[in-house]
Image (cartoon, rainbow, N blue to C red; front, side, top):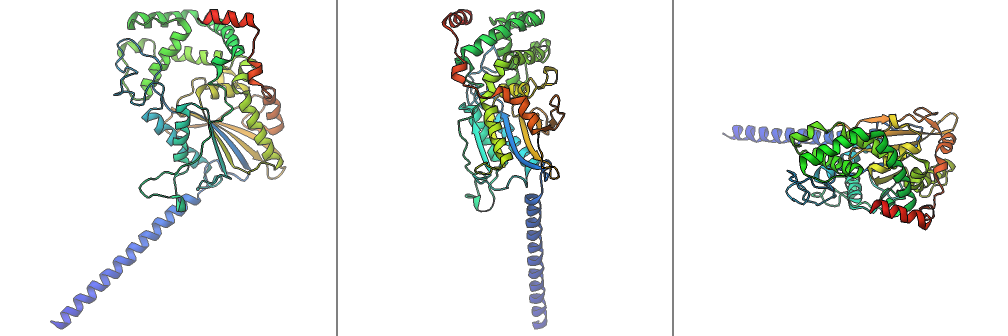
Length: 405
């Protein structure tokens, strides 16, 4: 009996030791895997990469317009619990995933832990853009190490400033822009009159709405897009006009209103380009303080459309319909042999399941543009005094007021 008892005790001891060793080995493997992920370089990381600027469109938002008898009324909190024009649940998820995508692209270049000296975030002072920026940062910088301040809250606070130089949300207060838009709108109507009239008349007849040409097209297209992105099934009657020809008409409208003239581009994104070039020049000169790796701007679809135009990308090659959760990245590289700087521009499509990355071709440059040539292309849009350049004489102001009343 004694020998049997000793045998049982020894067997139990051996079993415990085996369990401890096995558990320890699993723990070490897990730590190794975690270290491997943390230490792995992103797919866009290279010895030449020195700096990156990211500008995104916010995630999906609630519609701004309500069709009569809509199955998803804008004021029904069952469908739009956050309210009209506010960032939706899907929109939050889109921006969180965009943050993860940027981590996958730039991990290693960008520290896995947030430090103010490495990264800067800015946004327009619009709720949906600010919230989108916060969701993006949650995906980009999941807390780790000492920054995991609460194990039950896998999030950490990161500052985002509401001081973006992007003027896309200030245009209604800019008479000069409104004058340019009026002229561009007349050309747009003349070029698209048949399709535009047919679509608006159909919408009015089917829905009982009282839509006018350009505004009617935009708010109806915007409503259907918001509903579709949120995952709601669109009514059968929409199939006759949506997605086509409404997508085509909306894309041309975005180009017309936000990218068709030099003055429009200056007013919308000139201040943004000015700030971006100033920072890039500081990187090139070695004077950027703090010496950050990345700037992020939370913006709007208009922001990305106009920025493409400033880069000289022709309308036929543009992403004129910028999906929620999309972004553009402007990478600053330095050739390790020649020490010359260059810029590469990427577009991240928020409508693709894997957030597809497409290198943009800048006319005269290709997919890589020498920094001096990049300056030649973009500098004419800088040095904008927004308030001053928005001014018009009183006669033109009066004519504009009469037109838009």
